[in-house]
Image (cartoon, rainbow, N blue to C red; front, side):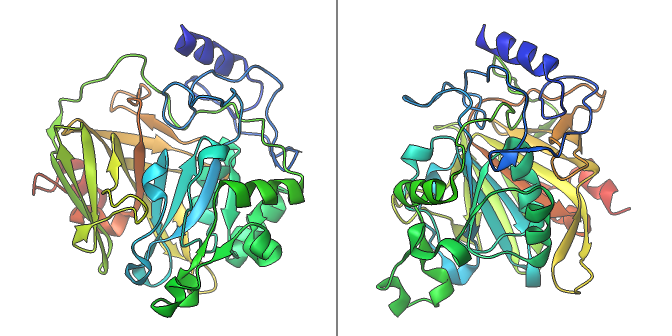
Length: 359
């Protein structure tokens, strides 16, 4: 019943920041309380990042939090990323990647980091979800995007120790840029300092399925791909937990706080054209549309996707043009350059759609 209500509410939204409705229009760039403006309507009563029931104490419409996390090998292990409801990973400069970890419950965010600077490609997935954006510094392109949308953020360059903590013990063995962290109380202090409204989210990350959807197209118990020649990822399905366990740089990627390997119910791989910005250094992602794969339960299905404007919602489609119903649970979303498409293997074989990307 609650999914039906959510779909109905999304259908009547007058702006494009709606989900699971056909013929979605472009989203408005109007701003309210430091975020993207959304119509004053009742928010869906489920977790907008996972499709599951809301955490206890979390009210519908609470804005999620998106934190930029260092993913260089020299910065590992990270803290708090195992608690994220969703993680976006995308390449930045020099072939390394950066993560954007997203949390639905502001009050339950553990110590997270090392926190790093913003890139506009990640920000473009945070904007339509009206996420509270947390980072330390920005590329000029990310800052321009924040300015364009008059989007209030929590930036360590301005808030410093109000919202971030420096681990001096860790700094004895790591570069200082790998030693800055945040958590629920520090983010709350930044929210108060910046007078950011924490309510106003109404858009789910995906169109979530009411009942589990079983994939049948391809076997995918073992997924491997590369963001670059130096950044390889592998995800192996664990049937006992029903999750994909993530590896990075040839080793399990773990959360330092718990020692547990990162685990996801959904793995979504999106191919996008990637080039360089005019500065010749920062990566430039074409996020208008592309192809990719949705992996769940050791199986995979090819998909197409659309996004468009910076504040437009990501949409996933089957080959017949109908929208994907993504299963509830934690999600890992990798946006991979088209030039790396043939590095994707499912069960050690390059799938047809990945091979066709580079042709």
